[in-house]
Image 1: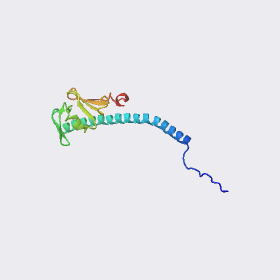
Image 2: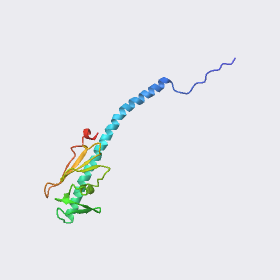
Image 3: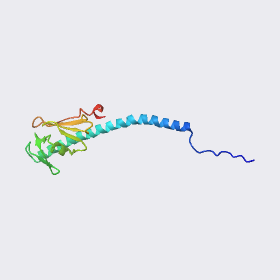
Image 4: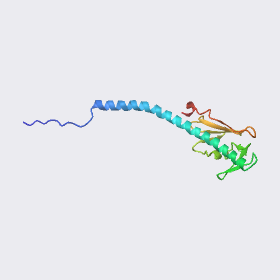
Length: 156
């Protein structure tokens, strides 16, 4: 008499599937908060880059003005753009410091906060994740910069 043996089924048991799903759930619970922290760190790094661009743009415009022996309020030309100057540094005008620094929308939100303060923020969802440029108070003094808004609470 012939006996028919059941062939071994190649597949996963229910317990194996539950274990795999549980492990994936634990890994995702661990990874998602880390991913959110990476986004915050990236946003802060982006804004630190914008701050460095503001500093470099202002210094370069000032250097051009000095080497060309221009008056402290004379505009300078940088890459074909006229940069308005005051007290030897770019003004907060939308065609001055952001152009000198190479900052543009939609990469950043650029705001002329006042006649002396220019603010750059990461995006519209994070307006307090920002750096500021303040024109010099007087001829012979440098502009001031602030990165006080670059904290995790403002950038997350």
